[in-house]
Length: 129
Image (tube, rainbow, N blue to C red; front, side, top):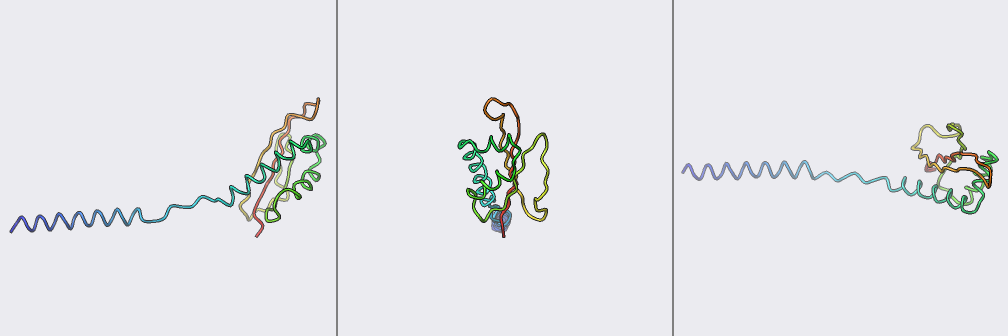
């Protein structure tokens, strides 16, 4: 009779352990923010396109942020808000919303033609709601 009781205890203990493991690991894993990755990738590709075209280095050398922004408006999706900054040596956050998730995409430049003028073009990007 004692063997049946020990066997019953063992099954109850195994059931409790198995149930606890299922309960703990049953919560779904957090999904990565795919939308933020798409925004970051599109901003990077837009800067790279402008650099390959030759406009980004010229505008950065002239410290012309508004020209960079107007060129980016034609490339980047309308559902993405952004602010472009030319950083030497630090970037300001003027015009960047404080109540949203904002991504920063950096693109480093050494200069334009024969002129060495190290700078960083930073795009602050966010999803327009």
